[in-house]
Image (cartoon, rainbow, N blue to C red; front, side, top):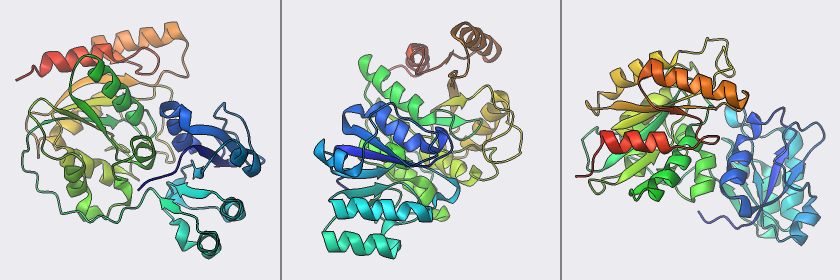
Length: 337
């Protein structure tokens, strides 16, 4: 899948920033590709880049309209269809990470065919996957897991990729969600894979590698989330993780979109080890990554110091304070062969 850059980011009329996390992720990690944003009345997300019309975006060189939003069920709201059709008519390709296929909407499919434009459904792949086998394979793997969805699992592995490479380690980010695929240009959206093949798809995304090579695998959902635990478990078994980092947002009391209480970090560590041992008996935690965006700096540092002392693991906010302590722990726990 080759998506033409640069992008005009379409945010629709999403209610909050989390609903536009795909757009935020692309902007944060590929800022040079994100020329402008297009928002409808009532939109409560803002990427901090110029608002543009379709015409203004074209004048600035934008080639693809990216539907940079997520929602429950991955549906395309009816009132967005006219905006996407208008983009195709204006000369844009359109890329989406939603579950619904752009080409499944007759008006969009007809406009794309008439104008000779490309439709990219990043969440879907034409590749077929085997069932997972759970057989040990060479190379090292780290998986991010969470107390909830949308807590920083992708940002943590992207920050780790940068930090580990700066330390001379051989490390690659492995995308398992639509935003990660937009950022890396490869990977597979695991939540769109038929359930029987989730672990096999992860084995395909992270194949056998050199003994000291690290695949840094983007986690999804949470083993405790009633909506997404199935995807999280398939990821864990397919990743065959040697190491994992627990990602957490400290101000939540319930998991996103449901009324179930947020699990503790200890519960997530214990369950991840218990279930992960099926495919890697040596799985172990190497750190805690906390999204402290809602906290002041002093409060954030106190929280991280307390967590590090309580769990005996390095604790950091990868965006705010970096990942040096996590890389130190990885190097210490997994010396080069």
